[in-house]
Amino acid sequence: MGKYLRFAIPLVIFVAMAVFLWRGLYLKPSEVPSPLIGKPAPDFLLPQLDDPQKQFGKRDLLGKVTLLNVWASWCASCKVEHPILMDLSRAGLVQIYGLNYKDTREEANDVLTRAGNPYVVNAFDEFGKVGIDFGVYGVPETYVIDKKGIIRYKVIGPVTYENLQKDVLPLVKELQG
Amino acid sequence: MKLGLRVLLIALLLPTMAWANPPQRDLPPNPMDTDPAIRARVLAMGHELRCLVCQNQTLDASPSDFANDMRREIAEQMAKGLSDQEVKKYLTDRYGDYILYRPEVKSSTALLWYGPFVLMLVGGGVVALLALRSRKRANNTPLSTNEQQRITSLLHAKQEEKQG
Image (spheres, rainbow over the protein chains, first blue to last red):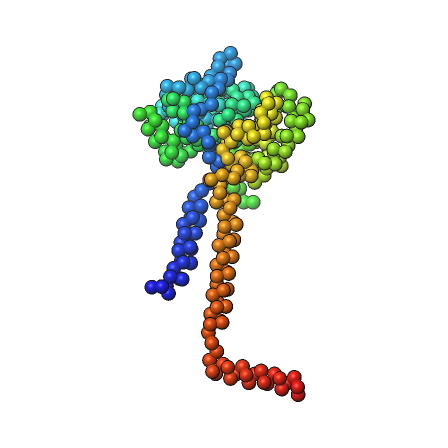
């Protein structure tokens, strides 16, 4: 038994490495995990996109499970994501709020007029300050926020049918109780 | 490029995130431009931070819009009186440890920082052990009579060669 031990050691090391490397194939290193998961969403109050006289802030998100979608008219992936958000809003499973990020009112409203408006309301984050508080580093990003205003999940990149089905909607259902 | 291939390429690239051409806006003056001390601090800190869009670059080296925004934000926080350490905490609170280009030395990164040295010691130790063991084995194994004779005759042959 002892003389087979020296063959077992490289084999064990190889198997251990293979497991880690295999696991590594499924990791996405460019996705930066958010430190805000499990923490309260940053408090914010911004003018609304369609009406500068009105405001939309964190307080409007409380009391229900919501999605906060960060988007902009100049963002290509947002155009890909948009029809999916339209479907989601029509399904009525969860309310979608928007954070319009570093955009102009004109161009953003133009998108909503042309492609449809899946949002309950949009906040106009002209300079991206609120985005920084949320840890936004690219667009689009979508946050799942619970009834108490705690961030529970962050979708990095566009919402897809796949990540809705696998990650977002089950969580939303669970949070809705 | 063939049309089909082009379409495929575009379809593959679309799902990536886009930081393309945000519009110009009117902003209050950047403290980096008005205060040289802050400018120096921001540029220095830029070496220590990661651009999250071009993730292998420091914030300092990145020309991306995100990097510009970060530098401005850092400048504004410094203008409010935050120290360098406080600014770093401000950023890691929002973006996590990954925004620090140089990972902090703490319990969760101990393996990263000390791992290579530990491995070197272990490797060196194994090599030393093997070398010692093989030398000991060489010293402990006496020469057989046959080997003894062959060495003696070879040595004599060498001596004769030199003298002859």
